[in-house]
Picture 1: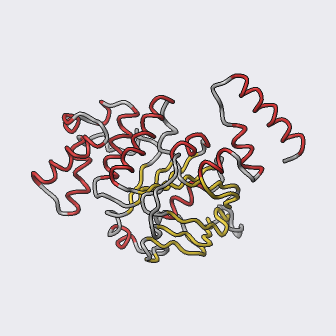
Picture 2: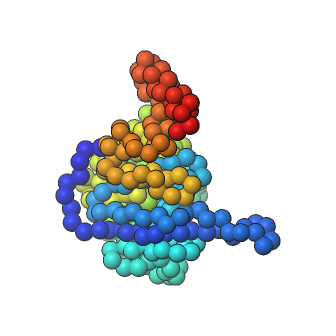
Length: 283
């Protein structure tokens, strides 16, 4: 992605974070999902978090949201330590910190009309009547859905449209950070591109920041200002998005790059050859 306009200060800082899950076996050792992970996000920035399944990337996103057990380290948001907030305290942060989940089919209540889904967080904040209706119309416009979409049910929309609705819901309270947990992985390639462009368009218009979790290096390359690469619960490479995704230094990131498909058959063949060479050296 293009270079980030200079902005001062940190929005989110994760420092030496460790997350452990209890063993399912009696007296078994806890599983350490995150090991001394550190990163930061500035206002209006997208930090991409990439890695294969089991790398710990989703766990990091869940820890930021207060949904994973933090064993050590800290999470600061706008300078406030939010590492061990209560559920009630977390609810009080909902206007500033939101999430878009992976599956647009399961993240929306199938029995509620779209206007009700979008106005639910507004009502919780105290907005009602014409003010709430106007905000719902603004949200539908923001994600490029027709205004009459509010009178329809989720099942009447395609996967890409449902994800637009989920994004609109996340935007309802005008958050400063959205955790995006694999938000395009359930979509086909054409819809992936449209949703990624929508995320960028929204960021340019509102200044919202994203922690963007994905297993796909090409997706992360497209949307991120900076990229963190995760392996076995640790960040093994972290830096400028174009640099990390084009000329990576860590062997694992190099393997992710080699595994990424490219449209040119000759270039893809060369990439396969290079990947085979990496295997041969044990890298």
